[in-house]
Image 1 (tube, rainbow, N blue to C red):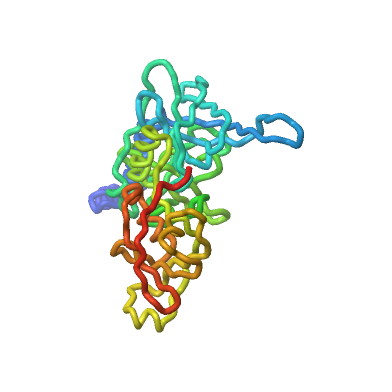
Image 2 (spheres, helix red, strand yellow):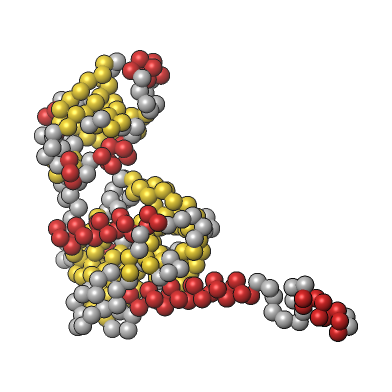
Length: 339
């Protein structure tokens, strides 16, 4: 190509002998990831957890356990992590970002949301991550995960928010709602670490990945974590309402749906009723179909769990059931759920 051709190509926007045209975009992406990681990484810690077991005839002894991640969200030493990382721990060793090791105290954990708060007593103030607003998160935005997978400290992976509003089953059996799905890679040891926006704000607490699938990972939304953390710091536990029934989601017979004009084809089927529970006192029986609670439809056990918040403890409500072919309204006063 002659000199004139080079000039013409340059004027038409065709790169000649220079870097690829998308280098600017790649550089902006890299700067966003680097900036967010630099902002949040100083608050991320590695948790090494020990639990005690008992062999036959032997005294309790520490059992070897794995490790997880966590991050400071207050400057006086409170950190967030997953419940499944620290639940039942006899000792928690916290490896701080500056290399120091400290003992962590479990302030409280909530298996129903897979969240926990650990307190670390260290001299001076610690760098605290800024907690964002998970309600403002949008599908497709940049998502950065920071943690300690397989013990490799302060590992950063990046991807996007793949979906919002997912439900994830906790080890307790309750459904965790509003979960963030991301393709930022998570591995064992990432649990409890922060999921971060490009502005360096924590939008979620990394909790799980589907294996062997690629790029299907989940984080508890940070707005849920704020609510849970506040109560764990204050009370050491989350108070929830309790009816005392065991059940499962089940279909309703089409004739009953048509006869009563029910909004959902499913309900919570009662399989068992605990002795002395609010459900037994109100007259709930095995085989009842729970279809509503205080004017709210119930289409399964997850709906019932969502409705049984701490605000319902000690407050009488109306439990709507189908028994056989008869629609009934039972008055019930939920109690505080056992720890």
